[in-house]
Image (cartoon, rainbow over all chains, first blue to last red; front, top):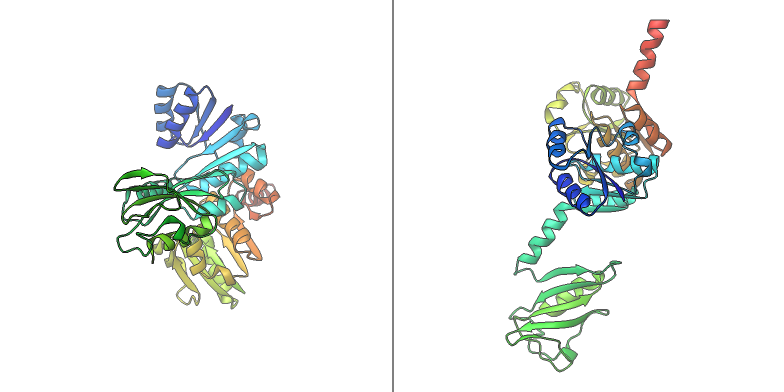
Length: 219
Length: 132
């Protein structure tokens, strides 16, 4: 694939390096002369100095034959414009923008950007996974986004601790698939007793997440 | 009319003053409070420190009740992004956006934004002065 990367900062550099090693044709667009020099030294002549938001630079870069444009500068507005110019002027089939302000995710989708990657959100999600006191942690959103896998820690004082699985009223579309307690991990049956302080892995729908948390933590 | 202006540079400040004199309700946003020195002493509108590409700042400036939005910061891309947010997210009836780069201006114009390129306008004016 021919992929254009806008922005030769750290993200742009490592991304391009990976894409090149996977055998893709990559061209980086970067405004800063020093960064261009450094990347040319490291990766060879895969970089053109220029503003990736400018139609002329993109035309010179052969954007009309690009399969994908990925904008990873530090500025959300620059990433938005680079993607929009690529999409509307050069008909690039797939545009991906990096987002710094998580609130922009919705805005970018509405303005026609195919995929957004929010570095702030990704870091936040990882932190949430690492913070054990958080009552409900996202582990995975299944493709399509209609189901997700979450982890819930059953508090000592939860009203459902000590109950059998079949007695617990879970929101529709939610199921407990794994319980990790004192005796190790087990796939629970209807008669399994939910232990206090156990960790529970459940499948749920995003809209039922709050109800599931409430049902299991008893608050 | 309720008008929100993003960017209190020379153009933004002067536009704010003109609209204010005409009795319109003006809110002007800039990330740098020092820029508000450009507003006249008798300015009746509101001056807010904030980023016009941020939904919350725009809400604070009253974008939800605005009849018009003008983006005149130094950055073309910031203007383009803010104008699109005003138009497509907040459905402001009249949105105008300054874009210095003529090529970018042309593209966003075809995409339906109301745009002005001072580069093109300025160059034409100068030519007319020289050629007569």
